Image (tube, rainbow, N blue to C red):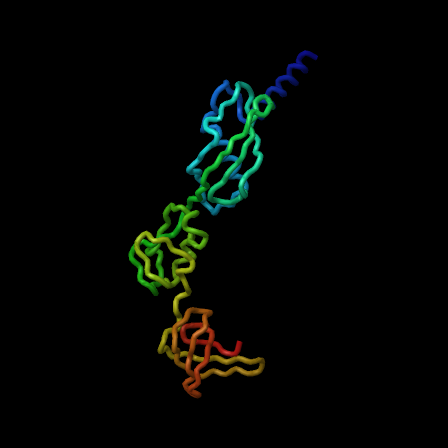
Length: 242
């Protein structure tokens, strides 16, 4: 019987030790800034959606009042209100401080959530209309929060694409700077293919503009001399009628 009681008490002690206090106990005096920052970090980072390899740093952390002075005892903190959750940028928590379960006051915690991760950058000066190769781009750790959501993080999304603007070494590469490379260029001789449900006609044409695969290009029918817009299918083939 005594052995059973000892085993029960031992199991209870293990459970309580694993659970631990919410924020620990402390002597009377100011709460360590690191303790408040850790509490803030745990709360504001929960629910964030991060890209692969993304990391969140908290900068410009501040508390008010500072210092937060509490009597000795078991300290816990409870969030009373917060700014919009799940977002980067400035976040603020209003926190109730309790000692031995009794409210001792409130403190406002704030800080900037900055997302860092790998982003693509130019490795050399790149002119407009350059078709990117693997050697033209490299990954670098950057502040993704400052760069914005359109920045390219995967080389596979950039290599083989054509630049719509010139870039200096180290410049971030954005999706809006890229397009499919031109398959048809001004002056190229192409086959104009016209399709209907019951008819297939092909005639020679000349490209009057340049365009990439799937894009519209203006072409001249060399038989009728008429100008039409057609969809680029291949370097020498465009489609009208569908």
